[in-house]
Length: 372
Image 1 (cartoon, rainbow, N blue to C red):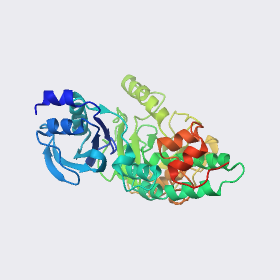
Image 2 (image 1 turned 90 degrees about the horizontal axis):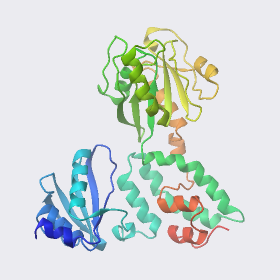
Image 3 (image 1 turned 60 degrees about the horizontal axis):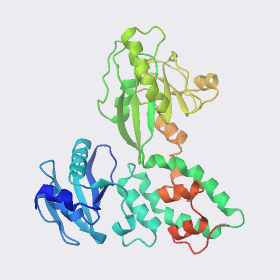
Image 4 (image 1 turned 90 degrees about the vertical axis):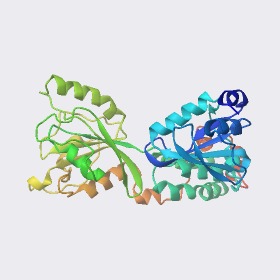
């Protein structure tokens, strides 16, 4: 079969990438629909495997990997997890006639007792943080119990609990934490300490960081994207000022901001009250400032007086900073261990927003009763 023929035979072929878009060891793409076999054959120049079989494949010269046939006629493509490779294979699938879209998850996981169980399995395949696995695995039981126990205004109470748990969505899409401080506050040194490698350039001269540098780091099972930013000062030169202006929109979109002082010298920066803020004094190895406790905005004056004390150079206080960040993001270990329902899937989010009725929710989670 030629690749040109595959385009005409690909009617109804749909693919979905299950793994995160960040760099990883392996990426999984599910290909399904009436034309899936034709697309697979055109992509690999080999026939699609039969149910339960796995074979090696050359993905059109883009990468080597594996193809497996799952129940429901779903073909699973396993390839290297580099974003460029994944994007290239996705583009080739589209050229061969497959469309991006959501697959029938239940067909991919026939062992699932209810649709929520299938969504849990798919979410686990794509979650960025290892800590998400246990939290996701508890959700079918948590939702079934909550629905059965709901009485009177239980539906609204259940919604309130699930809304509070929406912070756990950051386990699936890692949060961004921006490091903001004056020049030479040690932001890049701290980022390298957090990453455990040299991810950012360090220099004793101010203005060495001219652009944003981001690195994903796992802390206690939670992946966080740390973002280094150019030093902020009022008397910055033309190039430094341009770098600051370019970085500020990204800082505004960050889930949390760490405002870093070089000892007692704070940046000329006023953080938004819409985002949690952690204040910290860096370079503790150079002074004898007393350690402080975590304070979050509002109340910036008091927060600065009781900022965390740390050293990106020696590692002193860095664990406390990580703990403070996870707490402010709602991802501390005690929060992850709680048993309340979490609206992790599209179906649960629709119900949370009032689009689905209680009966539909009960059927989705496999509960026998519905909240009033």
